[in-house]
Length: 411
Ligand SMILES: *Cc1c(COP(=O)(O)O)cnc(C)c1O
Image (cartoon, rainbow, N blue to C red; front, side, top):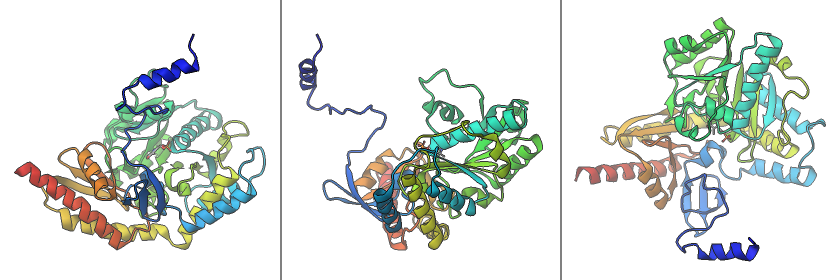
């Protein structure tokens, strides 16, 4: 009979070099345990200090433990953490009106993650066509190399096969076409099409910046065909690209856009935002989330947005971006290992001619945290308050790594 003693015996029999973790192995984790963060810096459990140029993947946009968000959360912890969305939640109302005050949207639905925000966007697009317009349309067209999340619907929307492996069957109602191919997009539109969804910078896909003429043509096409334009701002939003939301660079207004990552400085939260005419598509009970927009989560959102407004953080990001690009070009222009330096604001990609995985690890050993975007692209995501001195430090390390790598190759 299986009993606890037996299970412990099995654990003891495991080879010593195999770590026994109670977690599913869904991540290839680096051998670093980070225990403290302040501003641009992180410390591990050995006392090593790191300059953070990944920010939990575009999450801690205001740096680690930003003072005003921390104070607001502490205050809210003493007052009230959670109530059901069946009650009035003043913090949620305030967070929504702040979000609509800094964007082209009129209404907000709060959830807990990016995938959930996109899931809500897809549901709203279907509801609008089916309940308001009465067209029965349901299909969403997305683009190759895109990333929209890990739920079944959002991984189906994602234009990368690797996230779909082993998860068949996928939900119906999605089509993916090549980016910047207007003819393929037009050909994919049918009388089932409800919406087109895209990112302004395909961040996970390799920091691919969408061309303005293409984005404007997509927006125009949506108007002509009666389709909703959904823009995924989960990585590009909240000041990351030097504007509140990346679509502002393109002169287009989405019907729906989604935000998460940087929205609450590291507190888990997401939001789906839409235009006034979409409001009636959702009625009481048509969508919901237990934890979406709790007093605690929306306190973090309020403090994040108020801080961003006070300090004009998108402008700070735009300024730091200019400096970062200038430095990178100065240090790396003409380097044979570097194919292209690109991006928008403080979402920066350095495409290299070979995989960059070892550079990421070597960077960690030299005290700089950054990440790749696809195999060959170094991705830099500093916080939006990053100083010129910190940029100098980071670029020096990245440039050294690349130069040393190039030297080894040519010897
Ligand atoms: C991270 C990300 C998502 C998914 O967000 P989660 O919070 O991990 O669910 C979706 N779209 C884009 C563009 C992202 O960068």
